[in-house]
Length: 125
Image (cartoon, rainbow, N blue to C red):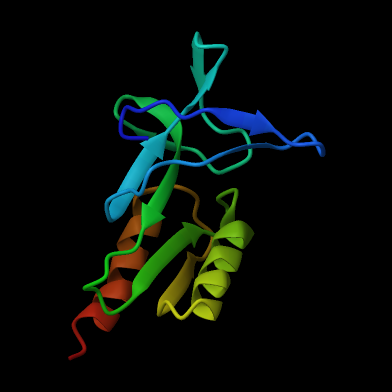
């Protein structure tokens, strides 16, 4: 993340873990570097296309926003994980909203519907 390589450790259960430095608020892409040679998207998460390549991503919610919004198309892999992430954020006190666009995938119609849903929340003051 942020162009920095972080060491990872294989746990007894076979899961690899790593800890990064504190990250700025916002959306961050990352890739896993295998044996210092091959960079691959994280196979354990949904992948995103950015910076001219596929990669994993994390989003650090901004402190000055009223809510955190996450959306998926109903035909998009990972929708249930996204909904679970929003529920986990709510349990931690983060005002979070999930929207699932019916009968769409990762496409323009999904984004358009999401914008319509979330804009109403963002500008209701």
